[in-house]
Amino acid sequence: MDEISSIKGIEEKLQTAMGLPKCRKCGCMEETLKTMKAQLSKTMDGDFSELLTEVENSIRKMEPTEYT
Image (cartoon, rainbow, N blue to C red; front, side):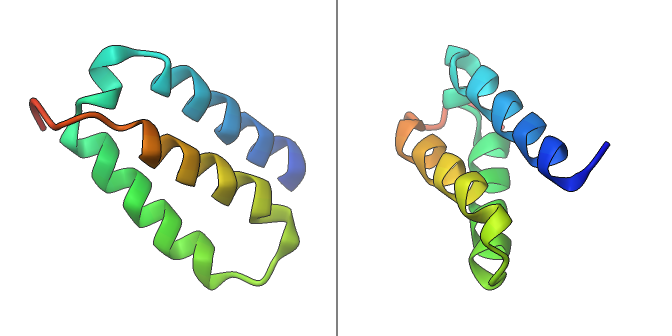
């Protein structure tokens, strides 16, 4: 599997997870997304720009944390 299809796979998994109400309220998901954003923001590789956008969109969809 090449890098681009791996990135697309991650984007698809994020979209699926953010479609689940329990994931939008999970503190673990929020922390994971914030960590991903921080790391992706450090890279200059354009291949990751779509993934960074997906992570940022997912962060905006987060709801108040109910559990971790």
